[in-house]
Image 1: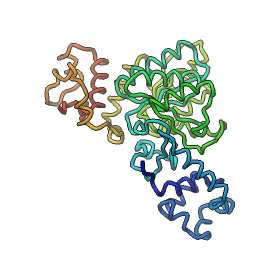
Image 2: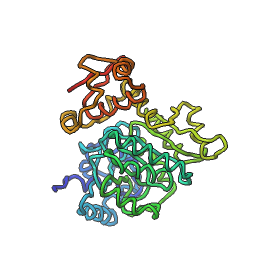
Image 3: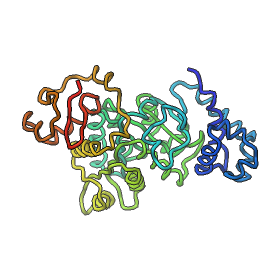
Image 4: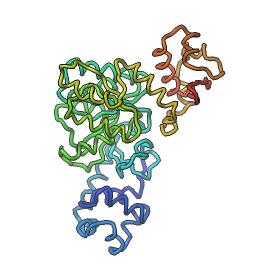
Length: 367
């Protein structure tokens, strides 16, 4: 596979010590593509970057790290997606602080599939892990890719559920993509790299550093249409993912639990602050359908309607729709099904390109 000739320049900028995200964005805004940044004179660069960063920009150390990344790219399934790449996830591109590039191992096309983040406590209960896995499996079976952070507990259970369905899963790492953390999830990470996708914005070899995980969390939420928190204490890092999701305009969901459990406190706090209570996967699917009708769907990247429709089996609900716009209540009456079932099936059909959501809560069959 041919490699983008400009990729080395992107790597050179992002691997330069002291050149932070804000400075990098300033340089790109001022000069354009990385090749133009690298060709700029020092006085021009000094307006946006520190003297130490400019000194390091063309250093042998950075050149070695660039070559290391290029060598890593030679392995099967490895890729790097930059801000200038058409494959860059569009939902993430619309956030306030998108990474300049993403290291990917596995199915990079999952970056632009409809997705839901599922996160929670590392010290989860057995019931919490069962809930996370069953919710994630249900979402994945409906075509949603499950995004999480590869942590122990809820994250790992969510990834397993995602792998069990057609939507698969994306694991966003807080380390370099060649450094799996925690080590106990190595086998799961290898399975995800084969059947799903591992993603990191951090340079190869980056260890598990505490300050990198909040940055990872805003990528988890940024890749998804919504965020479900299954179990979380009040001090859980999962709440930073939920906050990032809300700031990015995503819908936030939380699974309630016992009032006596510390691992329910974070979820209850989210619900009190406006997150949607989720007792079942159908609750989330129904809310996502309504949320998408309000205009969010215009920013989501949906699968090709023609290709998906050709592979999608007919749904009994389509028989009751006809080709005129119809609302959920009318479909419930025609099909004799509860609103939760109808909403979930409508979302599946919409993801498959069989149905379009219209203003006013209406749906229309497309084919």
